Length: 111
Image (cartoon, rainbow, N blue to C red; front, side, top):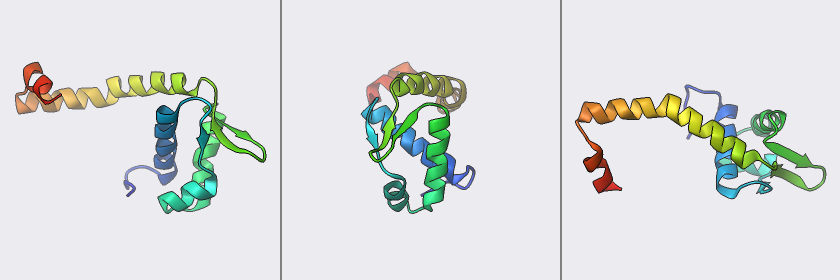
């Protein structure tokens, strides 16, 4: 399930980010133990991912209640993810499109 080219806690972090992008600000996130069981990893790995997200202000913990997407997390993540896509992923996609000889019409036909 996990790629070998990146630390697992970073990949778990990405899973949590995807949930925040899907569920939005204020969404309750799975507990460390629940996410560890779901992903089949050590709870310490999940805890490290959550700590990283808490340090950046994207996740907040409410003692005795659980973990939640922080207010403004969705907007911050959309900004970050869009920038990353445009600077890192899109150039590879463009290169592949050119390599295959596709044009806008080909792409729109598939949309």
